Length: 624
Image (cartoon, rainbow, N blue to C red; front, side, top):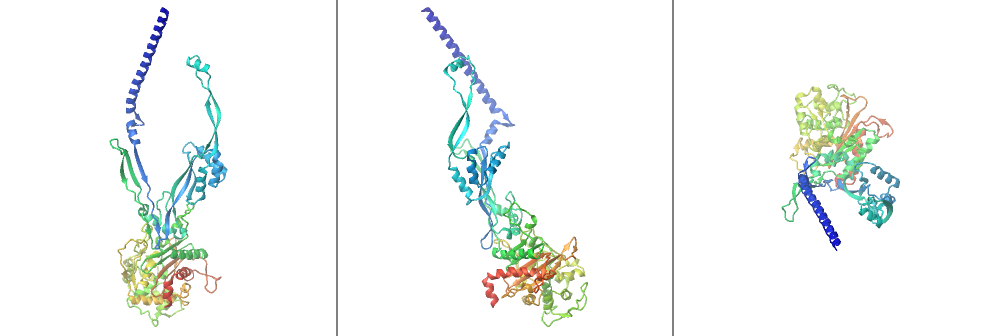
């Protein structure tokens, strides 16, 4: 009995000691934990306090991208818009090998190609998760439907897993009594279960789409990889089209009741505005086809054209060569050059009608059929051609006779020429696309030499213009001698009013003579359109190469005209740079020197013929 009590006392004593040891351990752990909390609260991680880091993690900055505005033509047809597209993003670390054959089939691509792409992505140390396997998929693309169907399929996926081996009861006792070290062993086992495919995500993207392809590319322009406009309308009106992305800052508010985050809006979401042009896509198309055809057939370096309504609205602005802006793989800056606005040039004989108009306005000529101009005497460097002795103003314009024009110009003062050319808009900006527009040149008359004044009368010398300015000057024939401002964007008011340059009577008389230019006896005979009265003027100018006029046949050819000749509805200016293969009218296989009459005039005819065929109002007008 005594021995039993002693044993019981010893057990009780050992238990108390163990209890004391356990209490000491927990007390020590509590003290360590307390000091660790204080330490962590104050410690810096990378120079930023934990408290500060925690605060930053409760702050979120979110942004919503603004939708870019569309570009429309005058009838509401879309010229540039945003397509909602999808791209397929694969997480290379999650795609199960068993699904690769079916995934390749859904993506409509070779299995080996898919395996190679995934393997290559996995071999990279950083950013190996995101693999954009398909881009720019329209919502109707069958690949999207295939992937959706694949997501619903379950396949048996088997994986080798490491499993801890079980230990028997005897070994457990030995480990608990510390008579044996605890060294677990493992073995690999095959585990199979049905799974759906992992790591396949759809992502939404937008793609700028240009339905009219290359026909409008130099005018509309393009956006870059950052989706910012870099040329044409896209670049000029970037701030209007792009809009403004929203920017909201969300911060944790511990004092709020029910509201955990306090939103602060730094930028409000503003979607881009649509821009409507005065362009008519039907008119643009016919002009583009005619320019493209002639540039290729005549082997010209380039071609351009502009078509105007009488009120100054631009119906077409064409340039070729031009590229398809939907093809991002190919980019050539020359194919986005808007030569109508950006190139300054000498317009040659297309200026002669204004010389005659001014002379008629100043009563220096009568422009009647019985009035004859002496062309037998040399003026400056121009010598008589011995073909004509006396010519009417009508004949001078029909034959585009330089000496006859100069004889009339000699009766005018240089101040009168300068003031009139300024009123016509030469040397002054049009304000259509200011970032690319070249306003040309018109030197002040005080700097003119005698040769400058003379050469100005037939489109050379102290003036250079762009094609849009030249076309605008011809609007006097559609506005009884007045000239309106040009307009490209609908909804933007212009402060400039019509400028009266010539009298109604003088303008109508010269318009009658230009009608005669587009006849079998005139230089514009190849601009004739059956059933319509056409008026206009051809022009040919030697190109300046390396600071000198080319003597090797490099010419720039023009035709500027209007239809119908009375009460015009369309005014068109055409320019071809260095056409090399031109042919005679009656001998189509006989190659001759390229002039405005056998190159640019043909473009006018082909474009206008198609435009007029769909315009019933002009047909009725032409029959009267």
